[in-house]
Length: 241
Image (cartoon, rainbow, N blue to C red):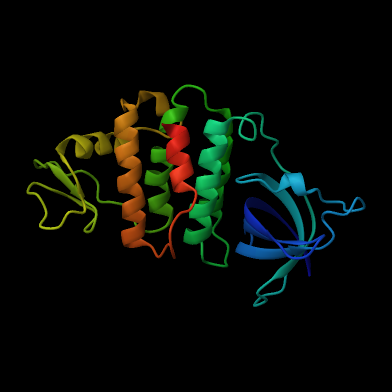
């Protein structure tokens, strides 16, 4: 059946000289694989350049429940980006997040709340000026709620450490080594109180952001099955400095 849906592009692999198989997170059907025949042909109505990390698309697809690979009839940009494709700082974040999302978003079913969050987050990454350096850690923190692995809110009682394994704040140092130290724990709590549209209010240095990124990636590894290494992480860290 021919269906229309919005989608967020994640990744593609070559299928033949003129065709690709694309991973797209859709509003109606969750994450899906689509074969796109003849996309490299001059006669194709869909251009390969619309398939870039986190690009927002309007799709026409042939969907059949239970089919491993669906077919895509047409794709066009839903919201053209002004900065993300051309800014290496933003595009490297988009590449990393596309890889992470492809590993995390495993359900092939509709989740409108999650889709809206991702859709608007991609728009924010493109538009953000002030505080855009804080986008990545704030996104990773907020995404945990939609994936059902959000950390416990900071308690009223004294605390010094955030335990990555139990996803909770602790007064005493955990027996294992998967935790944030006192300084980073208290920086982490800033994320609980800052709106996603007010990233410039986060008082983070470059070191804080690097350490928080490492801890948040570890948190994802502990609580979600990421299925191997994140290949784009090392490149991202080089770009972020």
